[in-house]
Image (cartoon, rainbow, N blue to C red; front, side):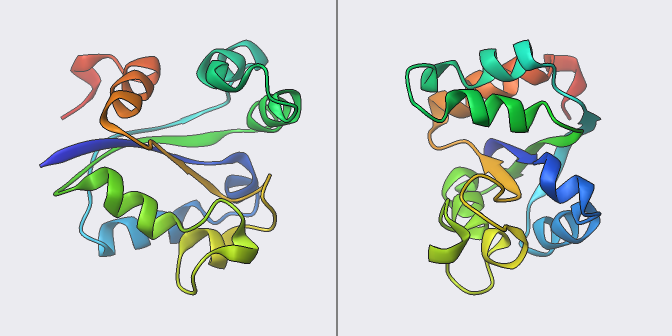
Amino acid sequence: MERTFAIIKPDAVELKLAGKILARIEEAGFAVRGMRLHHLTKREAEGFYAVHRERPFFGGLTDFMSSGPCVLMALDAPDAIKKWRTLMGATDPAKADAGTLRKDFGSSIERNATHGSDAPETAAFELGYFFRGMELL
């Protein structure tokens, strides 16, 4: 069993897609071990995406991620990181495979509905950034 971190981003929450995305997560066999609705501050978004600080999209990304509430989740499944990234699809919804969350619910590379950890080390950092140990089952 592996644990990963996932976000239903502000665009999907605003469009009332969180329930549909959560249903797809559960249908894919993930166990939700932690979840909460949270409106990131600009500072929280900057800390979370600090690895991208020098990239030209950093300001727009942190503005977007702090623009409205999002759903933060800890997901368990065998090979959860790879499985979640496959379910999400490519970062650019136009390039994502049919049936993926980003293809079905994303509108652009910036507003692509979901986020997921890309490696075990990233998952550990991201889970720890938003959840205290006792908040996770």
